[in-house]
Length: 198
Length: 120
Image (cartoon, rainbow over all chains, first blue to last red):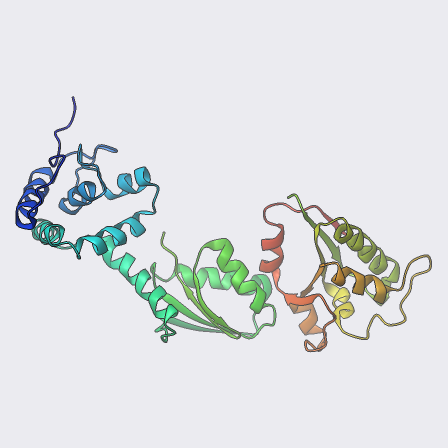
């Protein structure tokens, strides 16, 4: 049985009227089964579905990401950035937040990653969550201890590492590249490493 | 795997035959357009220091200094084991061309997706 459309194929031209249509779609679409995986769709996800053109049936963020070929957090950031600059979608986003009681938890984490990337781009100083002086430790011993140290951090948290070993200049970037923990800044002997998303 | 080649060497003056063979094979790889690395560990790290290879020549082969210089000129890299280098109190400011000091992770990165290798 086909799922009901969550929004009309064409939205009204008038901003206020478009906002009313989107708000109604968010209200009625909230809790409907995701067209991809069947789990209940949240209010924000209804709006994201409409924003990405999936008006025939709402999808959760992960299914939207998969179907559009984008990482979920990147899609989330892109859509929320777009919504905030369009009055009708911005009003519907506020309504969705009221229904859910908060913005999507993943948005804060995604913005934290984006904030760090921006800070690096403008040369801002980093504020590490952990500082570790590895001294002369090097080679396999260093990267094993580093792995264990990062396991104690939460995704997004930043470790400031001081590693005097001469091989660290090559090893730390290599290890970060292989394991996926972003190397935010490297100026031997100091390295800023971010704990990757799980 | 395609395009990479690793030669692992653990000898220097203490076995000039093996030290020479390693760079002969390394040259063969580099000359064959492979991305070639000679990994120097244990006593072989001595070879990475300028001046050490001067006058060294195994009978029947080119001088080791020439083999190493040609290897570097052809784009070959010498990965020098950091702990082995440090325990011998060698001078990191006096490395031969093409040599960089690394730890295990750098070598793993190079070999992780598959690289033929030979050890001396």
